[in-house]
Image (cartoon, rainbow, N blue to C red; front, side, top):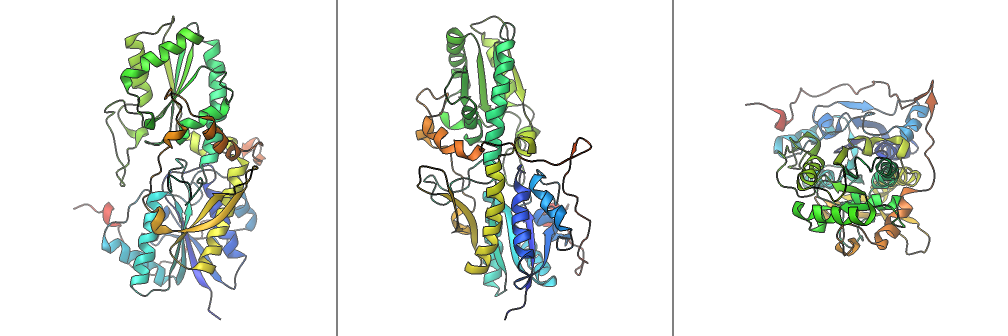
Length: 429
């Protein structure tokens, strides 16, 4: 019988409200099978922690603290990163760390770029004849991992919660706009999502019967900044006010972009926001109603608020983490656990696997058939797709002295066995 091998699990990319529940799914599944898995480590701040041999021992953590990962949002528990493995020295170092700590299983939680990293690590280990099982665990609020046909993955953990955030947020914003219409008839709300429209589309879930004066502006709509005044003024003439939900990646021209190591625009770090440009444009062109346009930019709270988390999303994030462990044991290296949808009238998820190479660096756009002819709304088919993902209940969140009780992991780290290493991209000439 093969001896148990140690495990490293790590997170990468932007956070979500449920990312720690996937972490919990992996960790608890491994701890519950000591005949197959040895010590479970977390790479402190993702693959950067692996490179720097900063390995957090999760096997020694109290199980009650690990259980609290369910209601602990974002990546503060073990950290994340946006580091792209590029250089052969980095890849060699990863394998050295795995060998030094007898790691036989590597689980990487993240989006399309993270699946590319997991795929490269799996391929390199295979090419060098190393016994390493690399498995991906999907995570992205953008819902852009996979294919246009939704056959590789139906949706990613994290999306259901940010969709619920926007479904509820737009209801409250509509109340604000209705009350302030005499002075501020137009309210512009900027949503996350880079250049993918799944997040702003979710605002329609807050008003499926279309009673609000709601306009949804997605990058895939093809609208330009010059088109917006006409769309808004038509709504003002019809309804007297307008609420716009716009993607941070909507094309308004240059915004003084800053980019991360993967080349993605960091909208919150850029010189100008899409929301501000649209507000300025509408006020300069003029509104067909008394008053001004004003705007709100919600920040990382939309992806990190446990209060708004979907209970469906929480459950699925945990189960896809468990599925990744099952796939690693039964099917070997080079796969990502995935969520598909049963062809039933009532929503039911199916947990399966897909090759990492099929999802590495994939980028699924919002389907054109789900964009309404007006180009400022989504269709009912999208609503039918997304509605089950936001659930029907509030999450259960423990409070102590009126404050949220998050997981508190003891700082127990593996003893370093290798010389210090500076990740390639962090070196200065």
